[in-house]
Length: 138
Image 1 (cartoon, rainbow, N blue to C red):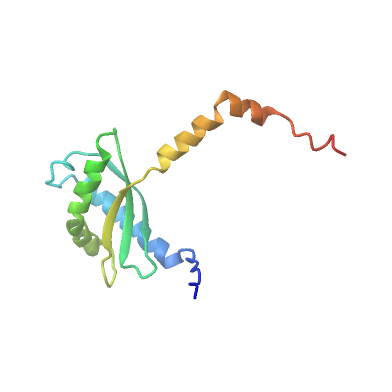
Image 2: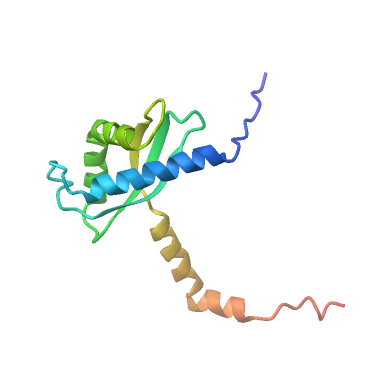
């Protein structure tokens, strides 16, 4: 018997609000520079997006390091310190249960620049500049 496809609903207002509160809290905690991990000390890290599960128990935090560097090492260090961040978020965000935190690299900026480069490619630009022939078919 085939399984039914489950459609994930859009994030609710509460889910979005909590995710934004977590993003602000984590941004402040990371910007405080009180982290003792050598992979994180003195690093400029931007928390771009927080996606939280509908039950508010799991959160995926997307980060982007400033100035390049080894993003994989930063994500590993953040995931090692996830328990510390979870405790700090629990102090700053009023919730019954503090969510499990998982950090990932936000590659949306790289994807946007790849698409931008494609759109500026001379072949694509020439193709976009052509006028559609739909009026001449009538």
